[in-house]
Length: 147
Image (tube, rainbow, N blue to C red; front, side):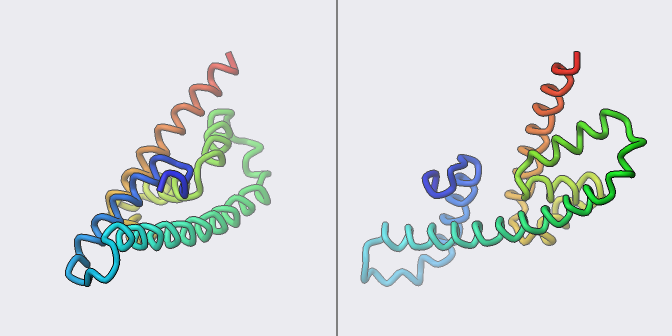
């Protein structure tokens, strides 16, 4: 998973999803092949689903971002901190930015965000927490560069 994802956090989430699916479908394993091969096929399908979903979310976030750049006149009167936050949000992964926007900006609960993004609740919480941590890092870098 780590080689496929190139991101340890996503790889861990997908590995966990793989084991949950394998546990639920254990009765379907008929023993005709190796157990490891069966498990790897589940893992690969999880990766493909994640990749497709992530590509869709990137496209969705790009459309959202393009809408923001078209309305850049709105930002002309904004404070520098607000603009720094928007720049930091643009650096996040699309899934993290979408989850944070839905949760903090639009007020959806974690479970509602999970349903909207079609992700497990734990994965949604992980994306929000990791995204917020990255935002803090970006904002700290930005404030130290401005001093």
